[in-house]
Length: 349
Image (cartoon, rainbow, N blue to C red):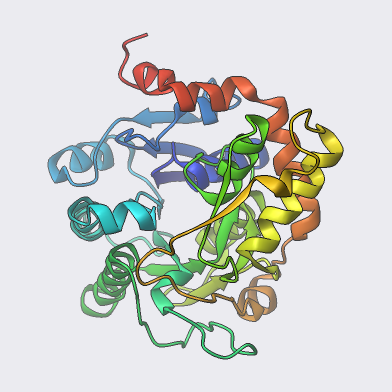
């Protein structure tokens, strides 16, 4: 089977590709334009596989996408390419509109033409990977996002992802394109880009720098280990029911403050500081960002019941694995911080 993965050099996309190449006999086509968050170093352990092909293409470039589809003739499309950082979407929403909406539109059109050209094979699937942020804020402590929760996005990022979700469902209903949608909770794990909370805190601790937390830090997120998510995505892409939506969560609700304090506790144990008594002393509360949702939480019963998937990692086991990975892989994250991985992506080194 030939699986085309968009955004395969990103955090979740690279985890998906590593999972497929290490655990199946499928071929993977990685389509990524290598923005600042696209890092081919995250695929070094599988990049020499004869079942792996890389195409540096922007999904906003429809003509180049058409060439890729005609060349590789994918059986499944897993669409992960997206601008994904909320803060960046507030500072500059235009890029999010282009990539997440226009790019998804292009990919749907090219996939539809490919599917028709192949005479509508029943095995073809377009799997769109989205986020729980499209649902907005949970106001009651016992509420959970289900597949039927109404959309109420709060940021330019989540609004652009909600728009792309609607496009995918419209192409299913109007053109009968075989689509599936998944919405996931917050991912974390190895190869996580340092602008996100968990890797930022880990790396700041290593450098004895302040640990910034928005507002009071009581915002609640459900945390999902990225390798658990990769397993779930492959299951959905290959076994999920066409036209369905599956929510993927980790059953790990934590406040942002709890997350940071847990990282501090583990780092105090693994690499005690010579400068502070406790890494928690580095925590600083900063002005909250606009439109910051208070709580996200996923009800993942459907995928557990229908596809027999459950997360293998608790937050406690997953966060320790993540910290240990960052401590053991300074070469990877130092290249991200100093920008040398970008020069490699641009063939300048």
